[in-house]
Image 1 (cartoon, rainbow, N blue to C red):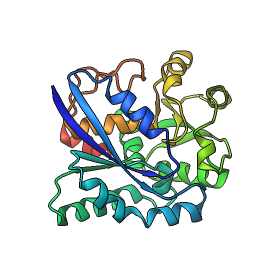
Image 2 (cartoon, helix red, strand yellow; image 1 turned 90 degrees about the vertical axis):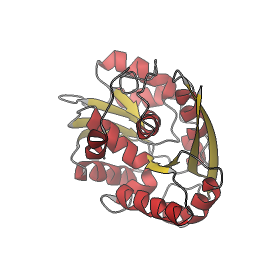
Image 3 (cartoon, rainbow, N blue to C red; image 1 turned 135 degrees about the vertical axis):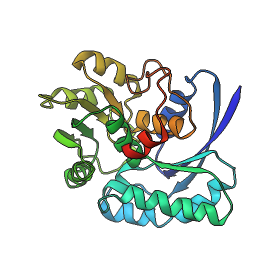
Amino acid sequence: MVQHRVGLIVPSSNVTVETELPALLRRQPGTEFTFHASRMRMTAVTPAGLAAMNVQRERCVIEVADTGPDVILYACLVALMAGEAGEHHRVEALIAEQLATGESRSLVRSSAGALVEAVKVLGAKRIAVVTPYLNPLAEKVVRYLEHEGVEVADFRALGVEDNREVACIPGDRVIGAARSLDLTGVDALVLSACVQMPSLDLIQQVEHEFGLPVLSAATAGAFSILRSLGIPSNIAGAGSLLASGDRHYTSAELESAR
Protein backbone atom coordinates (compact mmCIF):
# COMPACT_ATOMS: atom_id res chain seq x y z
CA MET A 1 0.00 0.00 0.00
CA VAL A 2 1.32 3.44 -0.95
CA GLN A 3 2.03 5.81 1.94
CA HIS A 4 2.06 9.61 1.74
CA ARG A 5 3.13 12.20 4.29
CA VAL A 6 0.98 15.29 4.71
CA GLY A 7 2.45 18.39 6.34
CA LEU A 8 0.06 20.78 8.07
CA ILE A 9 0.68 24.39 9.05
CA VAL A 10 -2.06 25.26 11.53
CA PRO A 11 -3.03 27.88 14.09
CA SER A 12 -1.88 26.90 17.58
CA SER A 13 -5.47 26.77 18.86
CA ASN A 14 -6.78 24.64 16.01
CA VAL A 15 -7.83 21.10 16.93
CA THR A 16 -10.35 20.26 14.19
CA VAL A 17 -8.23 20.07 11.04
CA GLU A 18 -6.03 17.41 12.65
CA THR A 19 -9.20 15.45 13.40
CA GLU A 20 -11.28 15.85 10.24
CA LEU A 21 -8.55 15.71 7.60
CA PRO A 22 -7.06 12.40 8.82
CA ALA A 23 -10.58 11.00 9.24
CA LEU A 24 -11.29 11.84 5.60
CA LEU A 25 -8.06 10.71 4.00
CA ARG A 26 -7.95 7.46 5.93
CA ARG A 27 -11.21 6.51 4.20
CA GLN A 28 -9.42 6.70 0.84
CA PRO A 29 -8.89 3.10 -0.30
CA GLY A 30 -5.47 1.85 -1.31
CA THR A 31 -3.46 4.65 0.30
CA GLU A 32 -2.09 5.37 3.77
CA PHE A 33 -1.41 8.86 5.09
CA THR A 34 0.58 10.20 8.01
CA PHE A 35 0.18 13.76 9.27
CA HIS A 36 2.84 16.11 10.61
CA ALA A 37 1.99 19.59 11.91
CA SER A 38 3.73 22.81 12.83
CA ARG A 39 1.82 25.52 14.67
CA MET A 40 1.51 29.31 14.42
CA ARG A 41 0.43 31.08 17.61
CA MET A 42 -3.15 32.38 17.32
CA THR A 43 -6.24 32.35 19.52
CA ALA A 44 -8.25 35.41 18.46
CA VAL A 45 -9.74 35.35 14.95
CA THR A 46 -9.31 39.07 14.35
CA PRO A 47 -7.35 41.01 11.71
CA ALA A 48 -4.59 41.69 14.25
CA GLY A 49 -4.52 38.08 15.45
CA LEU A 50 -4.36 36.73 11.91
CA ALA A 51 -1.62 39.17 10.88
CA ALA A 52 0.50 38.20 13.88
CA MET A 53 -0.02 34.54 13.04
CA ASN A 54 0.91 34.86 9.37
CA VAL A 55 4.38 36.25 10.14
CA GLN A 56 5.22 32.89 11.73
CA ARG A 57 4.73 31.08 8.43
CA GLU A 58 8.39 30.79 7.41
CA ARG A 59 9.41 29.12 10.68
CA CYS A 60 6.59 26.61 10.32
CA VAL A 61 7.51 25.83 6.71
CA ILE A 62 11.07 24.97 7.80
CA GLU A 63 9.85 22.82 10.67
CA VAL A 64 7.29 20.82 8.72
CA ALA A 65 9.62 20.44 5.72
CA ASP A 66 12.04 18.52 7.96
CA THR A 67 9.54 15.63 7.96
CA GLY A 68 9.84 15.27 4.18
CA PRO A 69 6.13 15.64 3.36
CA ASP A 70 4.75 14.89 -0.10
CA VAL A 71 2.36 17.82 0.23
CA ILE A 72 1.98 20.70 2.69
CA LEU A 73 -1.37 22.33 3.48
CA TYR A 74 -1.44 25.88 4.87
CA ALA A 75 -4.50 25.19 6.98
CA CYS A 76 -6.09 28.49 7.92
CA LEU A 77 -8.60 29.69 5.35
CA VAL A 78 -9.48 33.10 6.79
CA ALA A 79 -5.82 33.99 7.34
CA LEU A 80 -5.48 34.24 3.56
CA MET A 81 -9.00 35.25 2.53
CA ALA A 82 -8.86 38.20 4.94
CA GLY A 83 -5.92 39.51 2.91
CA GLU A 84 -5.69 40.92 -0.57
CA ALA A 85 -7.51 39.35 -3.50
CA GLY A 86 -5.66 36.29 -4.74
CA GLU A 87 -3.63 36.00 -1.53
CA HIS A 88 -3.60 32.19 -1.64
CA HIS A 89 -1.74 32.26 -4.95
CA ARG A 90 0.91 34.58 -3.47
CA VAL A 91 1.37 32.64 -0.23
CA GLU A 92 1.49 29.23 -1.94
CA ALA A 93 4.15 30.60 -4.32
CA LEU A 94 6.19 32.02 -1.42
CA ILE A 95 6.07 28.70 0.44
CA ALA A 96 7.08 26.82 -2.71
CA GLU A 97 10.00 29.24 -3.21
CA GLN A 98 11.12 28.79 0.39
CA LEU A 99 10.93 25.00 0.05
CA ALA A 100 12.92 25.10 -3.18
CA THR A 101 15.80 26.90 -1.48
CA GLY A 102 16.01 23.95 0.90
CA GLU A 103 15.80 21.49 -1.99
CA SER A 104 12.40 20.23 -0.83
CA ARG A 105 10.05 18.94 -3.49
CA SER A 106 6.93 19.09 -1.33
CA LEU A 107 3.80 20.22 -3.11
CA VAL A 108 2.01 23.22 -1.61
CA ARG A 109 -1.69 23.78 -1.06
CA SER A 110 -3.76 26.07 1.17
CA SER A 111 -7.23 25.77 2.65
CA ALA A 112 -8.20 29.00 0.91
CA GLY A 113 -7.00 27.81 -2.48
CA ALA A 114 -8.50 24.36 -1.94
CA LEU A 115 -11.98 25.80 -1.35
CA VAL A 116 -11.79 27.89 -4.51
CA GLU A 117 -10.53 24.86 -6.43
CA ALA A 118 -13.28 22.57 -5.13
CA VAL A 119 -16.10 25.00 -5.90
CA LYS A 120 -14.86 25.44 -9.45
CA VAL A 121 -14.31 21.72 -10.03
CA LEU A 122 -17.93 21.18 -8.94
CA GLY A 123 -18.92 23.70 -11.59
CA ALA A 124 -20.67 25.85 -8.98
CA LYS A 125 -21.17 29.45 -10.11
CA ARG A 126 -23.45 30.52 -7.25
CA ILE A 127 -22.94 29.32 -3.68
CA ALA A 128 -24.04 29.91 -0.09
CA VAL A 129 -21.61 29.91 2.83
CA VAL A 130 -21.65 29.34 6.61
CA THR A 131 -18.73 30.81 8.56
CA PRO A 132 -17.93 31.00 12.28
CA TYR A 133 -16.35 34.45 11.98
CA LEU A 134 -17.28 37.93 13.09
CA ASN A 135 -19.28 39.62 10.34
CA PRO A 136 -16.47 41.90 9.01
CA LEU A 137 -14.20 38.88 8.45
CA ALA A 138 -17.04 36.86 6.93
CA GLU A 139 -17.65 39.70 4.48
CA LYS A 140 -13.97 39.58 3.48
CA VAL A 141 -14.31 35.86 2.77
CA VAL A 142 -17.34 36.59 0.60
CA ARG A 143 -15.50 39.31 -1.32
CA TYR A 144 -12.49 37.04 -1.77
CA LEU A 145 -14.61 34.27 -3.27
CA GLU A 146 -16.40 36.71 -5.53
CA HIS A 147 -13.07 38.02 -6.79
CA GLU A 148 -12.31 34.40 -7.73
CA GLY A 149 -15.40 34.39 -9.92
CA VAL A 150 -17.81 32.67 -7.53
CA GLU A 151 -21.07 34.46 -6.68
CA VAL A 152 -22.03 34.19 -3.00
CA ALA A 153 -25.82 34.35 -2.94
CA ASP A 154 -26.12 34.33 0.85
CA PHE A 155 -23.94 33.76 3.91
CA ARG A 156 -24.12 33.43 7.67
CA ALA A 157 -21.51 34.60 10.19
CA LEU A 158 -21.84 32.95 13.62
CA GLY A 159 -19.83 35.73 15.28
CA VAL A 160 -17.27 33.67 17.22
CA GLU A 161 -13.96 35.46 17.82
CA ASP A 162 -12.15 32.99 20.09
CA ASN A 163 -10.70 30.26 17.87
CA ARG A 164 -10.89 27.77 20.72
CA GLU A 165 -14.65 28.31 20.91
CA VAL A 166 -14.98 27.80 17.14
CA ALA A 167 -14.02 24.15 17.66
CA CYS A 168 -16.93 23.79 20.09
CA ILE A 169 -19.72 25.16 17.88
CA PRO A 170 -22.45 22.51 18.03
CA GLY A 171 -23.65 20.83 14.88
CA ASP A 172 -27.26 21.90 15.36
CA ARG A 173 -26.14 25.53 15.29
CA VAL A 174 -24.29 24.96 12.01
CA ILE A 175 -27.29 23.19 10.48
CA GLY A 176 -29.61 25.91 11.76
CA ALA A 177 -27.48 28.54 10.03
CA ALA A 178 -27.59 26.52 6.81
CA ARG A 179 -31.37 26.18 6.99
CA SER A 180 -31.73 29.94 7.39
CA LEU A 181 -29.92 30.63 4.08
CA ASP A 182 -31.70 31.59 0.90
CA LEU A 183 -30.64 28.76 -1.40
CA THR A 184 -32.61 29.90 -4.44
CA GLY A 185 -30.56 29.19 -7.55
CA VAL A 186 -27.56 28.01 -5.49
CA ASP A 187 -25.28 25.35 -7.01
CA ALA A 188 -23.42 24.33 -3.83
CA LEU A 189 -23.33 24.99 -0.09
CA VAL A 190 -20.12 25.56 1.87
CA LEU A 191 -21.21 24.30 5.28
CA SER A 192 -18.01 25.37 7.02
CA ALA A 193 -15.68 27.93 5.46
CA CYS A 194 -13.21 27.25 8.27
CA VAL A 195 -11.01 24.24 9.09
CA GLN A 196 -11.65 24.80 12.81
CA MET A 197 -15.49 24.69 12.75
CA PRO A 198 -16.56 21.03 12.87
CA SER A 199 -18.91 19.86 10.13
CA LEU A 200 -17.67 16.52 8.82
CA ASP A 201 -20.44 14.51 10.46
CA LEU A 202 -23.05 16.86 8.98
CA ILE A 203 -22.07 17.08 5.34
CA GLN A 204 -23.79 13.97 3.97
CA GLN A 205 -26.94 14.68 6.02
CA VAL A 206 -27.19 18.27 4.79
CA GLU A 207 -26.45 17.25 1.20
CA HIS A 208 -29.37 14.81 1.31
CA GLU A 209 -31.63 17.40 2.94
CA PHE A 210 -30.96 20.19 0.46
CA GLY A 211 -30.33 18.10 -2.64
CA LEU A 212 -27.21 19.97 -3.70
CA PRO A 213 -23.46 19.49 -3.26
CA VAL A 214 -22.25 20.34 0.25
CA LEU A 215 -18.60 20.87 1.05
CA SER A 216 -16.36 22.36 3.73
CA ALA A 217 -12.84 23.68 4.12
CA ALA A 218 -11.87 20.19 5.34
CA THR A 219 -13.39 18.24 2.44
CA ALA A 220 -11.97 20.76 -0.02
CA GLY A 221 -8.55 20.38 1.60
CA ALA A 222 -8.74 16.59 1.35
CA PHE A 223 -9.80 16.86 -2.30
CA SER A 224 -6.91 19.20 -3.13
CA ILE A 225 -4.36 16.97 -1.39
CA LEU A 226 -5.55 13.89 -3.25
CA ARG A 227 -5.58 15.66 -6.61
CA SER A 228 -2.14 17.15 -6.06
CA LEU A 229 -0.86 13.60 -5.56
CA GLY A 230 -2.69 12.31 -8.63
CA ILE A 231 -5.08 10.16 -6.58
CA PRO A 232 -8.73 10.08 -7.72
CA SER A 233 -10.94 10.64 -4.67
CA ASN A 234 -13.17 7.78 -3.59
CA ILE A 235 -14.32 8.72 -0.10
CA ALA A 236 -17.83 7.76 0.95
CA GLY A 237 -20.08 9.63 3.35
CA ALA A 238 -18.46 13.06 2.99
CA GLY A 239 -20.41 14.64 0.15
CA SER A 240 -20.36 14.39 -3.61
CA LEU A 241 -17.09 16.31 -3.99
CA LEU A 242 -15.08 13.41 -2.56
CA ALA A 243 -17.27 10.62 -3.93
CA SER A 244 -16.19 11.26 -7.50
CA GLY A 245 -14.90 7.71 -7.93
CA ASP A 246 -12.53 7.10 -10.81
CA ARG A 247 -12.87 10.56 -12.34
CA HIS A 248 -9.35 11.78 -13.21
CA TYR A 249 -8.83 15.52 -13.53
CA THR A 250 -6.07 16.68 -15.84
CA SER A 251 -3.38 19.01 -14.55
CA ALA A 252 -4.80 21.72 -16.82
CA GLU A 253 -8.25 21.30 -15.25
CA LEU A 254 -6.83 21.54 -11.76
CA GLU A 255 -4.70 24.58 -12.51
CA SER A 256 -7.67 26.36 -14.11
CA ALA A 257 -9.70 25.61 -10.98
CA ARG A 258 -7.07 27.33 -8.85
